[in-house]
Image 1 (cartoon, rainbow, N blue to C red):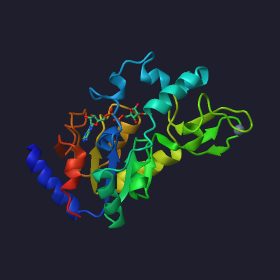
Image 2: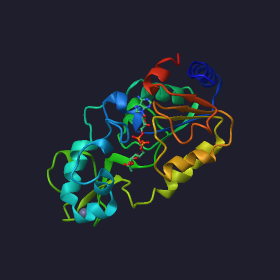
Image 3: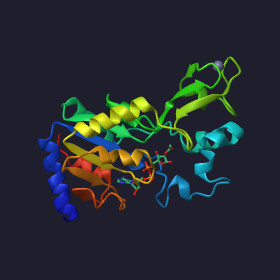
Image 4: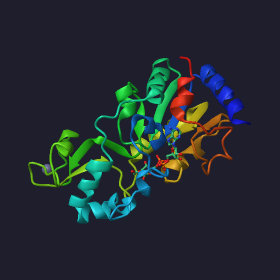
Length: 242
Ligand code: OAD
Ligand code: ZN
């Protein structure tokens, strides 16, 4: 199916369905000014002293929390970012009882900012942080309004509830995401290279015949999808007249 036909079919499917699940990644937020990871201009193609996969690992966090926090504050937090068309349309689809869940690998909270309620954040959120010692909760301001390694009143190091490399995903969130994917009629996968597991593997729980993949570049799942659209997601969602 050509790009144009797939796009046309996609719009019709969304209009007809009342049981949609959206599965997204960093490409959903690039139009909001947050760079993705693996594109040419992505975070993983910048020159850093350590590879980002190293800095964003559990063992590195424990050994060098100061370097981690320098990187994290500069590269992972975008306080001025606002939801784009894709986030806004998804929130509207949920309000209209057409969208059952957003499953996201993003940690930016933009789906909730747009009004989405059922959001499964596979990789956590910058808005939640906990003391490693006493587990006290801290918001994002504790990270942005301090410098160096943020510490709890008990003296413990505060860690973002963001899933780092070497860390498992939250079981409850994965279970909920799988449940919604298994039960949905139309699955939209967008803005993700589908290179990171276990997140990418969740697509395999979809057993329907309406898997729509919207991504600027090709992904390993293109051949499995029923409709593939290589266009910007914000542009595609702006065509959904809802
Ligand atoms: P990637 O950077 O790997 O992939 C983003 C994909 O979005 C790329 O294939 C781009 O071509 C595409 N893209 C960019 N802008 C787009 C747009 N406007 N419309 C459509 N497509 C667009 O990001 P993720 O797949 O989300 O994990 O990466 C997965 C995980 O790797 C992240 O959650 C992060 C990272 O390590 C953690 O931080 C735990
Ligand atoms: Zn504490």
